[in-house]
Amino acid sequence: MRLPRGAIMTDRLDSRAAFEEFQRAATERWDALWQGDKLVVSVQVDSSSVAKGALQLLAACRETFHGTDAIVREVSGNGAMWMEPTVEIKRPGEPPIVYGGIEPGDLTSLLAGELQLRAVGVRGPQGYAGIPPLAEHPFFAHQHRIVMEEFGVIEPDSIEDAIARGAYSALAKALFELTPEEAIAEVTASGLRGRGGAGFPAGIKWESGRKARNRPKFVVVNSHEGEPNVYKDRRIHEGDPHKILEGMLISSVVCGAERAYNYIGGEYPLGIRRFRKAVADAARLGLIGNNILGSGRDVEVRVGTGGGAYICGEGSALMYSVMGVRGQPRTKPPRSVEEGLWKRPTILNNTETLAAVPAIINRGGEWFSKIGTATSAGTKMMTVQGPLNHVGLVETPMGITLRTLVEDIWGGMREGHQFRGIQTGGVSAGPLTEEQLDYAVDFDSMTEVGGMLGSGGFVVFDQHVCPVDFARYLTAFNRVESCSKCTPCHRGNPALVEILDRIRLGGGSREDLSLIERTSKHIIDLSLCGLGQVAPMPLLGMMKMYPQDFLDHIEHHVCAAGACPIAGPATLATAAD
Image (cartoon, rainbow, N blue to C red; front, top):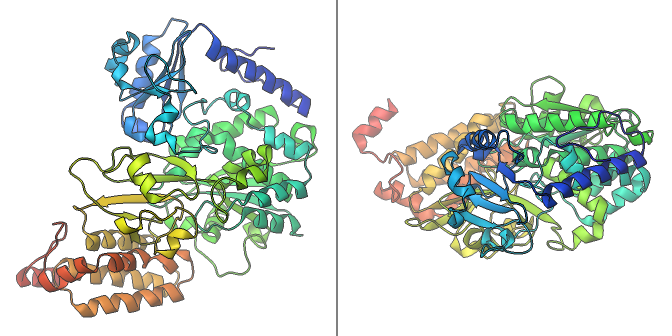
């Protein structure tokens, strides 16, 4: 049975055999696409490329090839934001070649073979016509893609593409080959730890959820991702939503949950749309709902969206939001695996964590555990912003050094910019300097020097960024995003911003530095949730790594970067009024 391009089987798959037949047909269609005699044009569309004109490029391609037998595909970005807008051309008899920096007006020249200098690489193991494999480019050479394996390859809106590339085979294995105990044992053996920042072992959490006696049980995916400059979870929704969905279903099956929620940040419309499409298509095929593939297992999947409050990324606040009330953290214990949604056992995992599960079930926990380090197994997706040559989203083995990331994968600093530091842990940790770049990126090594892996967001900054001003920005973010439930966070963070403003205006004193340390200690020790407990860490880290900058502001009224409004007494008096 061969399915036409873009067709969705409307008959519900009622057995594993029916699923395997559908998978076989989808694989045949996939192979025919790449081995056939038609021109295949794949435009990479995600939230970053849209800002650079990818939708206009896609429209131009569809107009150019309208009425021909050429196939125009809408795929996701491959993470290399620095070369967007990106298009892949597969001519008959040739491998697919990826081109970067393509505008709608370039199509005629591109198809005529006049833009070879914009060819970044061949998607495949071999080069072609002097163009090297994409995997040999420094941006890709150090990566090991598990979650991102299909980014830029499949059409995210096509469940046929996903199944042809192996999606839902792990779900079938969990349903028909493995007992819940065996599936959890694989996750435990893999060493998979939470990718949202806490790094808690996923296998232990799943085992606790399976053993919980209260019913019903729930699975929740934390896809809120409210930190600035962090966009990995959003891009999984945009690039391969079926990996998330399959991970949710496997977790539900093995832990005994009959309903799963994905709580997505409301600021990500493309990711939300593509994930909802994945849910609808999977439900139509019988991969969601009652009696999945005839297994007797029922799992309902719901999608919720957040309103933009950063605090709703905290587990208990997220669950309140899912239940339709104000998102605020609560005291613990009990933990969510004991009392979560509606005071029932709830297994909460990060998006990236669950997206890694299908590969673990298919290939085995031991395979995954051999990637990365002994205490931080597997791979990690990481995002970066800053004046770098190759800004983008990457997935590398745990244990890679910061220097390899900054200088090799991300291409080093752009001309005219000098490396000053790298902010780690989003808004939850301090920066690291040139001297710490040889430390490994994992859950433990970065903490030893005052950094944090967190959710994998980094900001590289140069000589034009003032550490005092940067610390003020990070502290102000936590001030604004505080839920105001507990006094230490609600009152302490505004106090820190006030002190920093005084220093930035040239009216600070050495006593202010001591006051920052005392106030920070109270916030860290007495705050109710993780936001307050780490809110002062970026500021304390900046003070530790760049003490002279703070002293220059206080003693000499000088901002070396020229970023702060250092002022004389008259201006200070006006500001105070």
